Length: 176
Image (cartoon, rainbow, N blue to C red; front, top):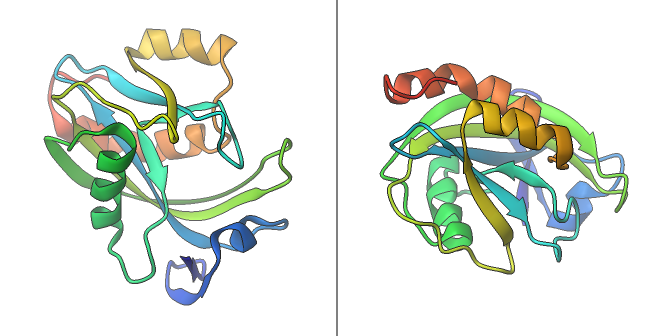
């Protein structure tokens, strides 16, 4: 189950997860996490091939949906642990962004009011293979190279652009 929201992010109901993603997509609460190591590299994850939508694409470190009544920050910390097997050394709020991206392969739609978080990671990820097919730590140049050849989630650019101002507040050595 997840929370349906209005355009201002106010909860207006709950829905089963798949039903909220069926076309045309119902606006619902979500979160996206960007993690960086001490060298300023961004952690990317490749979504597991078994995912029901957007399988196998590359995206930010972690994303998901808070449970009804769960604070987005708590959900983000929980899911980083569940998906990547690590805890952020630091995690802070980075705003919100709303988007709508259909998945041409499955026909499902991501229509999300997305809470953004940025943080630092100091442990080697131990990803759950049911959630994550692979991961990489990349510099800005390496990210550009990957984006030219690999498929990324439809929402990646939206959440990255919205989170970048907060990334600058993380650490003076992170230059994105």
